[in-house]
Image (cartoon, rainbow, N blue to C red; front, side, top):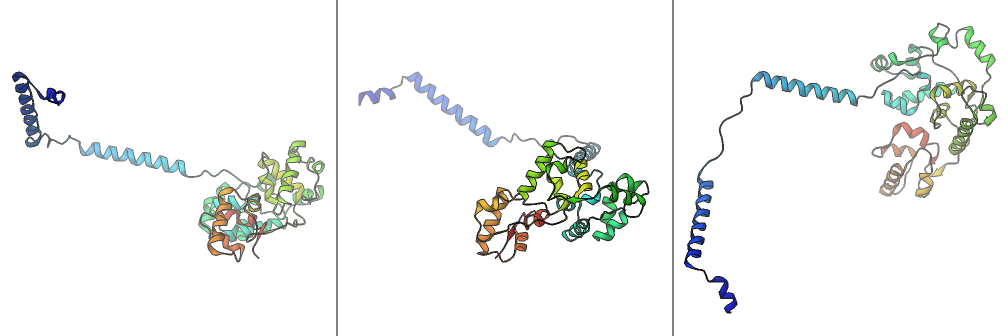
Length: 290
């Protein structure tokens, strides 16, 4: 008890010091409570400075918006893929009509013909047609399908079925060596056969120009027979093994299947939030709903 009391024994001078300290604290608190330290003065900013600042902000926003706009480079419209078509603003029907036309081994040789085949509207045609790049034998006035140039090419090149081509056959194309030929064959096996001519553009490290040359010599003459799997009974691993599906998309498909209990039609996949419509025709080659 004495030990505790010893901590509360102060001399007169110590008590006076504590008392004045408390008074000083109360005095400071009173100052902060009663005195307004805020200032009514506003920084002087001219209207011209405000306008200049706003213009600078608008300029920065416009630059940022321009950077986000995807650039379009010159391309041959004959080789528009599903993905490329959707990027350009074409709908599924327009892309399918183009692919169906090309599946016949025919080529589009003018902007007007492109619109006739696809049925795209005038505004979209005006936006993308400046980027069309047709081969030299078209731009020189010798349109494919109307001039002697076509006859010469068709006679000199007899197209073979790309699904029956060997690695040695592929090497007749300028730019295709042993490695690229093997890579094309391996990808064809992975796909269970090439169903669309433009799938050749999906081969890893195959330049677009070389791929276009391949299609001068080879095409899909006989569509492959692909072993489809039932989306309602397949395992997660089996669906994930499809070339055009990744883990996240496979997960979305299975989550949707769990919600509806059973998928009645493969077309239902288009209802899935975030489903890549540009890949639907490819994915539909491997899935069915029973």
